[in-house]
Image (cartoon, rainbow, N blue to C red; front, side, top):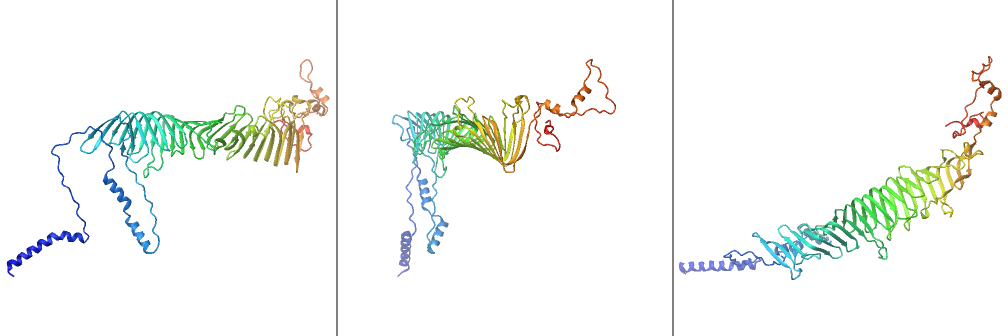
Length: 574
């Protein structure tokens, strides 16, 4: 073969290899190059389009990115699964995190008579859209729907302005109406103002105010919804019993109200709560819709609406507990004070239990001493327990260094002092039955028991009545029982190791009869009628000594009797 033929065959072989090379490479697994269609540049710029533009759909690139994020396994997790499969162990479960999508507004549900003007902004596909004659908008793929008379949508900033008869509907969650609203699509935040009425569709509660800010629940961005209402709104809370029967609503008013996830309600600034049985006020408060529990914080107070036996509670913090729409417990956590017609109760912590909206029993305890005051008695101890059926005092239990003081019989005794009883524990019983002829309508004390290191000091009327000082009865023992009749001491019984003293004052005539040689001493010291100086005493006669005796009007309190002294001389001035 000549050299010319060999050269020609070599050129033909190179041409075949060049032509078949890509095909051979594709057969070995090489990717096929993507076809790129020819692009033709427009000869003239496109004019601005003023016709209505349909809502933009999510871009294909975003969809591909989302699908890739859902299907592409994590390299480390994939390696761990492969290793676990090689060892025979099942692969670990991975929880897919739901990503939040940007809101793309869709106006396709607007009424047919609506008018749309869309203006393109700059070289990018961004429009400013103006809609009149009725508008309906929603984020694509979302159930919430916005309606209004007209709207302005600025796509570059993600803001939608709604004007006139605005209505927001989110199924099973929230619906509200207002005159104007602004929707920030990037933040999923909606602000409504001018005559806002919002309704929680799950509970039926309503809110009225001038402005409302609603942060919508967004998966991957916001776990729960949040509603904020400033400018002193009013909330109408609907409460239901176990049978799903609604009762009287609870009206809440405050400077600012915040609703978290339609579950927790917060009120700040001059809080006012009106229930069927009470009216409550405080600086701030919180309400749990699930448990029907409320808390009032700082300058908290409660006033009952009972016309016959009203009560008032004040404290730094008050908790309210409801059951089946009825208030059953009130707890004052700091500096509690309860008052009604029969009693004043003071304690660091006060726990009140109610039956059919009436105060049934109360307890007081804490770091400070608890005190209960009635028109006739005052009891103080480390802790107190009071039985009040029908809001009338029946029993007072004082536990821990208890002291009970009472007013003596003012009809037969004139004194500024009080009867005193002490003991480790004191039980006071009252006559809670209303007597038809009783004009005071207050329970009278019936019995008082002091147990453990008991002492009692009571004033007893003498034969002179109110004209003279009362007698004193002081006893000590393990247990002391005092019985009363018409609110006055009748019998005092002492059990185990009893001892004491009974002191009765002596009038001036009896005291004069006890003086030695009183007639001679009186004549020696009596002045002559002319008013001159008294005669001199003979030498060796001393001035007679007269003991200092108290006036009949001065109360006697000393109980110690000196040895060898007469009972009358045992009394000393206070």
